[in-house]
Image 1 (cartoon, rainbow, N blue to C red):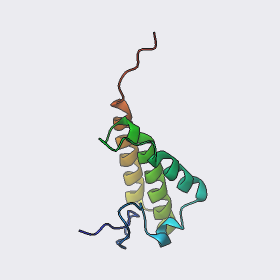
Image 2 (image 1 turned 45 degrees about the horizontal axis):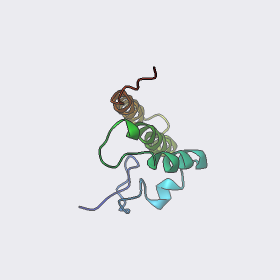
Image 3 (image 1 turned 120 degrees about the horizontal axis):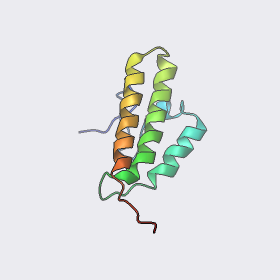
Image 4 (image 1 turned 60 degrees about the vertical axis):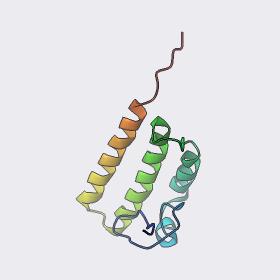
Length: 101
């Protein structure tokens, strides 16, 4: 199975390491691109756990931004973004408790 762009509605093929195809990624503001790049390095690749929460939020913002440019009044995009932020919150809740005594 081929990997495809994660921009909502885009089905262009792209390498598995890429979040989006070049045309979609070029629509993402540099600040959000930088956030995606910064947070991808924070993930524990052994399991999807609390370390993925910052990346999950960043990629959701990137995807929602491209969707906004395509269709500013799309309620599906808003539902997508809300759902993805909830996933990030759930991942964060899995963080092991630290004992700062």
